[in-house]
Every structure is written in structure tokens, then in C-alpha cells.
Length: 395
Ligand code: HEM
Image 1 (cartoon, rainbow, N blue to C red):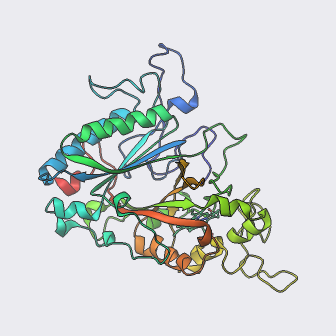
Image 2 (cartoon, rainbow, N blue to C red):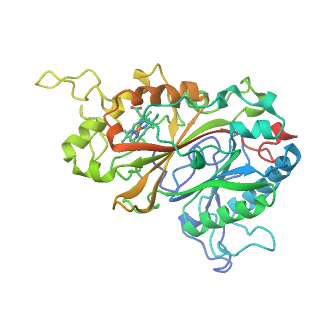
Image 3 (cartoon, rainbow, N blue to C red):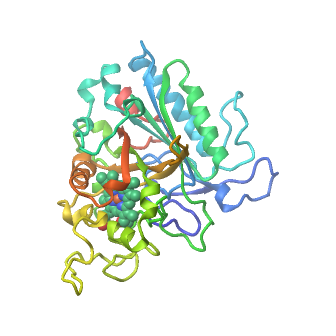
């Protein structure tokens, strides 16, 4: 992801950040920037797509309960939207609020909702299922666990405080009531705001600077690449985006045995600062044609950043906005750790799919990673004032 502004303000069109006064600390006592930064719930796009990466994340998928249909789904989205609006403003949700987040401000909390392909059959809305939700193709390197993949509904929660994020997760689960039950849930994290001397692109658990090549909200074609246009295949998806979610395990014991110079060849960029191996700084363009004194390409032909670059894939681009995960040490002593990879695009067929097809055929990174779960979700546009998320589909 691109670097957050020094103030931690949001980056994109969903824009605008609000400063809230402390509650429990007493009137007039300002929270630090981390606590007081709030993200608006309403807007053309849902929050949680263009905002800077948050320090904590939860991904949770639900299946509608047997017998629950369109009416129950609409009521659920209304309840979830009302709760998300309060949570994102740093307010308790009703009298039964657990109090877990009581002393905190909004902490950049975002709650983002999506629909999986199976949602449409369950709610009798098959005719309004976007073609973009057709199942992702199978890839040869997939090792997918169906129990941790897909789902009728998907919620992405991100916040710069672990208790605020947990509180949002619990609230969303409780508000599901009898209408839907959790199918799978994953926990992630990123660097905390203020941990580095200046805001910078995040690192992943392999130690690489990760997010450099992302499209930027200031790019003229950013909206076209990331958000569904008004004249899209399903009018209710205008302003929305498609999220590809992959739980990608990193085989860290193998990776960490590679000398740093080999690690840099695998990606095609320097580990210290993310600059291309062809020179310059992190933001310098890769010179994909440059050869070294031995006549070989400086950025190897199977380097991950070369294979995934838009110019190598007919312009295919996506906004990668991941969380790292670590779910403990397995019985074999290796960490169950990696990347909760989340890619946002206007159409997976011009974003994730062609790039993953190509990576699957010979990416130098492949021996060090394993795709273990997968989901594809239609994330509708942001709600207008007085509207709930998904209302244009469900009303
Ligand atoms: C670039 C790491 C999986 C697509 C990069 C870079 C790193 C990286 C370090 C270079 C810096 C940057 O531009 O962000 C990883 C790791 C992965 C992973 C550790 C798995 C654990 C994937 C997957 C896809 C993907 C599954 C899509 C199918 C891209 C794209 C770029 C990129 C599009 C930018 C290329 C450019 O614009 O030059 N990745 N990646 N990556 N990766 Fe990955």
C-alpha cells in the first residue's frame, strides 16, 4: 500500500477524516492522532479500500442460516450498517454494548461488507448476480481448504487498535443474530502507526517492502481500475469493487535460508528500500530490459515483480491491501504465518486472474508460498446518508 500521510488521513475518494474528542478521558482531553482519526461510513465507495493499512484486521465470512432469504438478508444488512456507522464513529452500539472499546476513539476503524456468489441463490436474486462473481479458475499451485474459503457474506474489519477491531468483530457477530452464522474467520496485522520515523510502504513477514507498485488514487485511471462504473454489468454495483481474498502461507523456514541477495532476485527489488534491482529509489520504474555484465537480465525473467507488473499483463492491475497473519507454530515447528492477500479491482478478469495465471506458471516466489484459502466477493458502493450497504440490491 502507498504510504499514509503523516496525519494518518485517508487517501482516497472515500476521503475525509474526522477528529473525535476523548470520551472516558474526560471532556477537552484530546486523543492522540491514532485514536482520534475516524473514517466516514457514508460516501461513493465503502470504507476500507483506499484507506491506509490499519494495524489490526479481522476477516470474517458468514453463511445465511437455513431458511433465511432476501427479507432476512436485507434486515441483516440494515442492522450491520447501523452498527458499522456507530462503530466507525467510536460510539457504543446499543445498551448491550460490551464496553471493550469504551475508552478509545474510532482508531481509523473501517467495516466493509461484501456478497459471495452463493448469496444470490440463497436470496432468490440469481438474476442480479454479477458475472464478475463467476468462480475464480483453479490454479495448479492452489492448496485450498473449502471450509476456510468463500461464503455468502464477507466482512473486512480494520483498525489501528486491537481492542477496537475486536469490539467491531464481536458486534458484527452478535448483530448477525439468527440470520447468519460464521463460516470462517481470520486475524491479521500490519505495522502500527508511529512505529517508523516517517510513514512508508509496509513490510510483509518476508521482510520485503510490499505495495510499491500499487495503483495510486492520484492516477488518472485509478477509479476505472478499482471501482465498478455506473454503466457496469449490474447497476446496483456502481461505485463498488470486487475483493479477491487469499490466505497465503509463507514457508518462512525455507525463505529465511536464502541469502538476502537471492531473496532480492526472487522479487526483483532490493530488500532494504524496495528499489528495483536496476537502481534508483523505491519509486523508480523497473528497467525490465536492462542486462548486467554477464549478459543476463538484471531483474530475472521469473522475478515476482516482473511477472506481476501491469506492462507484462496487458495492463492488468489491482490494489493490494493485505494484512499479515500469524496463527501460531505448527506441530512441525514451522510458523503458520503469511499474508491475508486482499486485492481490489473493478473486474477480477482484468485484475487478479490474469496475473495469478502467470505467476502460477513460473514465479520465483511460488516455492516459498502456499495459497490455502480463497474467496471472491462483490463489495457494493458506499451507502448514501440514510441508506444501508447493499440496499440497491436488496430493497
Ligand atoms: C509486487 C510480494 C503475492 C501481485 C510485489 C512486491 C513484493 C510482493 C515484495 C514488490 C513490491 C510491490 O510492488 O509491491 C508478494 C508476496 C506474496 C505476493 C510475499 C505472497 C505471499 C501476490 C499475488 C499477486 C501479486 C497472489 C496477484 C495475483 C503483485 C503485483 C505487484 C506485486 C500486481 C506489483 C507489480 C508492479 O506493479 O510492478 N509482490 N506478493 N502478488 N505483486 Fe506480489
